[in-house]
Amino acid sequence: MELKRLRTFVTVADLGTVSEAALRLSISQSALSRQIADLEHECGFKLFDRIGRRLFLTTRGEQLLVDCRGVLGQVGSLAERMDLLKRGETGVLKLAAPPQTIESVLTGFLPRYAKSFPNVRVKLTEALGMDQVPLLERGEVHVGIRHDQGVNPWFESFALPSDDVLAACSRSFPLGQDGIIDIVSLASHPLLLLDSGYSVRRLFDAACRVADVEPDILLESRAPHTLLALAEIGQGMAVIPSVLQTKRYRLNIARVAHRRKPLRDRYVIQWDKRRPMPSYAENFCTELAAYMRDVLPITRPSSKQRPVR
Image 1 (cartoon, helix red, strand yellow):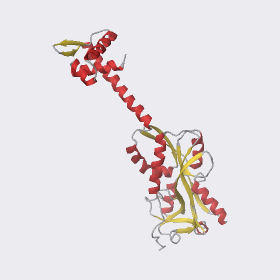
Image 2 (cartoon, helix red, strand yellow):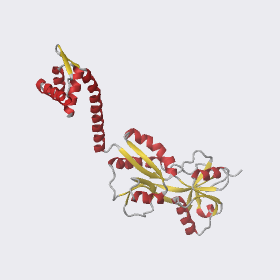
Image 3 (cartoon, helix red, strand yellow):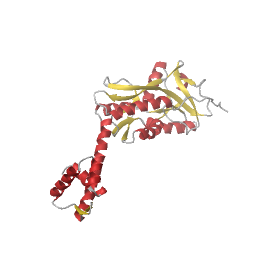
């Protein structure tokens, strides 16, 4: 059954005359009549009754019309979807990111992206930096947002603003000078640290070794907001990345430095260049990189720090 005949049948049923339908379809009346006759022959029953100059659907024709509209509607939807696929504006984007990035960055970006690309569904996987490597290599995610440790030469990256290592404590504690605290001074305080799965923790540990200091670790946790809640009530000093959102807490914030050089790590959007990227994934990376350059760092050193009373 040809779609052309179905479209002709629906048009004649809507307009009621061969002449008007032929004009609408830009074909001759004889060609249109042949298409209706061929469809009736294929169906094995009459579709129209002629009364004067107008055509009226038979009972069977009315029933067939409903089915034809459904078929043509599905074909139209399929054509639109094929066009979206061709233009790279539809599909599923698989993205891996650490929890603090999902909370602090993606919750602001994804609604904005959805308005520009409503036919792209973003599927999130929560994964820390090193845990993203096998996901990218196996193709389980298209892109990952992580700190760049240079572990795989096959990975391509969009560079983002650096992620600073910050110290956060109760506002009753005078934290550093000019928004900076040296790691030697920081290490003597009870510390609330993220576990070694976080890049900020590995960077902090490396800086402690370089500075030849042994940190006083009060708690290690995989939950950044647990550290912030404890720091707020004076139960230690939290070491956190600047991408982490802290506005819910009353804290003093300072950059952690060694010999006045801030500790920071390169932040990237990364993918495996051996695997083809759908065009909508490329658009996503470009827009996300621009957004992150605008909003990073999420948390900055406190402008004023309150002394101990």
